[in-house]
Image 1: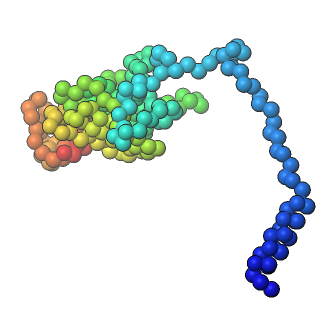
Image 2: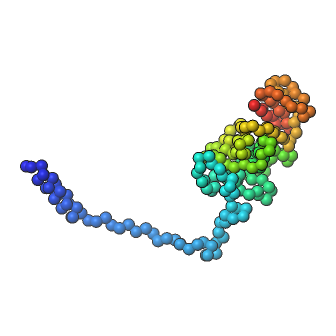
Length: 220
């Protein structure tokens, strides 16, 4: 039998089967619950204005994407200041507050009251204020589920890593500024005791003992 005739017969059989097969039923979904603006029905809408509106000029992603600040963990840093003047990023073991000249780093302590457990901050201020001289504003230059990088122009950059015990800052042609609101009891520079008299210190590894029970190591 010629090949062309075989293909013709197969096509005829397939066509006959297709003609005899029932058509698929049309699937109809449930009707929409509502297509009316909830605000018109008396429900309080979620506003994106004033203090609730992210400051989109604080988004400066290096890959050029125009990210929309929604409910990402780093979004508080892109909002206007809250009623207490701070927008905390709670990423334990530290709590951060981004400011124009740098970032405040708090080491919280846990307080339990019945069924309530709270992270408490030192009433005297941040453990550290990490900043660069002459820096005035920051923006989010990169972010994902685990990290967020904040840039203060070309002078300073810091990547916050969720759950990391390290606080990092990278400087470029800028003066490093480290301040504390707690108070310092003693400092060692490369293992040697140093005077806490405001004089410049040199070294690569510093151990700083704070008032209270905090002890930090600073690596340069």
